[in-house]
Length: 208
Image 1: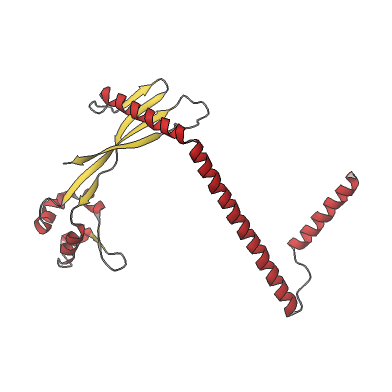
Image 2: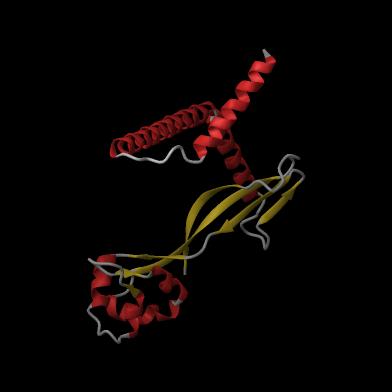
């Protein structure tokens, strides 16, 4: 039986290699049509298999997500407790906003500044109405139609132009803020090659 199985494996491998090359040349349109049909059937089988596999993966992800929901909820509760402890420890008031612990560290940090624009459509229209060589026109981006957009990154990078801008659009329309985040870095788990970071938003903070 083992000899027959070995022979069968050799034959299958030989046939597979033959198929991977080319079978006999196509001589007639009918044969060409049949080969084309076979290609289509095989490709459809692959597509269906991939779609079925994707559906199985999605179902598995949803199942795992539901199973671990209580664990994620507990992590969120513990993160809140650590965040409150960090506040009570004065992390937001001292020079260093990081506290080292025996099993890792906790830290507060700020994200980059960003600009908020009140009545943005109106502001864009005012800038668009300026002469093309006006310096404030640089604040506009001109993507594909219909309308230009305000480049808020330039507002942050060039805050010295805000007085000139407010002279055109009026005061109180531009404000800046940054987001305060809290992060925990558990390092006690030896299987972690890198420091694990778990972070979450605390609040938005106005920037004068």
